[in-house]
Image (cartoon, rainbow, N blue to C red; front, side):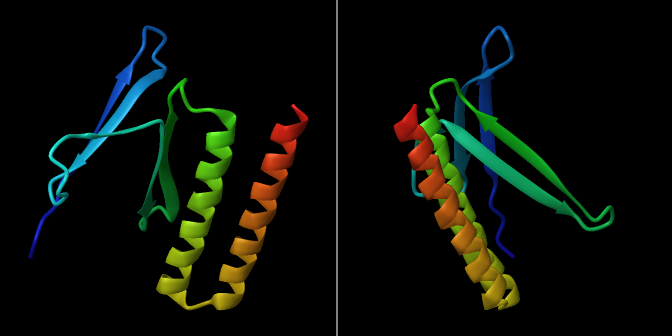
Length: 112
């Protein structure tokens, strides 16, 4: 059995707000840590039947980028749900919501 380790480093500023997020995976071909403006990490606790999450973003993460990040994450979640369950009707509902979310997010940005 193969093992891979993912390391996430978060540098905080004096107010304990993420200043820099970087990650590295032992099975990645990238030699240097990869930098990110935001991250979402979720684990399922089967015993407690609850999701445990870590959501972080840096001050450099712009509102338009956050909208794109959420849209892409929702689309990825839909694809993951399809592969895990085969429930295409729910997958389409997630994708429809994601598309509506993205459109409204862009409209709000244009207004501001």
